[in-house]
Length: 101
Image 1 (cartoon, rainbow, N blue to C red):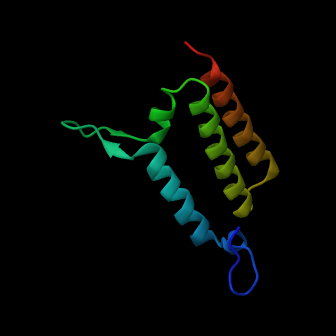
Image 2: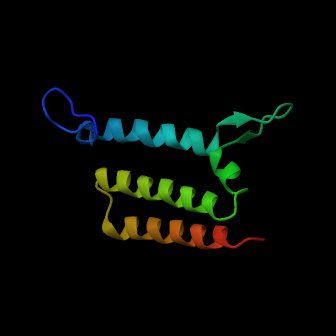
C-alpha cells in the first residue's frame, strides 16, 4: 500500500464533510443509474442494470456498492435505524438477485 509523504495511508484522507460525501455519492449514483443512454431513446442505463445480467457475481458487487453507500450515510450522521433499513434492503436485493432465473 502506498504511503503519503506525511506517513499516513491515502485512504484515511477521504473527507467526511457533507459536501465531499455528497460528491462521492452522486458520482456513484451516476455510474449505477445513468452510465450511458440507449441510442435512439432518452433512456439511461447504469452499471446496476448490467450487473443484474450476471447471476451471482453481479448481485454481490451491487451489495458491496450498497454497503459503501450505507457507510457514506454513516459519515453523514444518519441514524442507526435508517442505516439498518438500508442494509436490510441491500441484503434483500442481494438475496433475490443471487437466485438464477
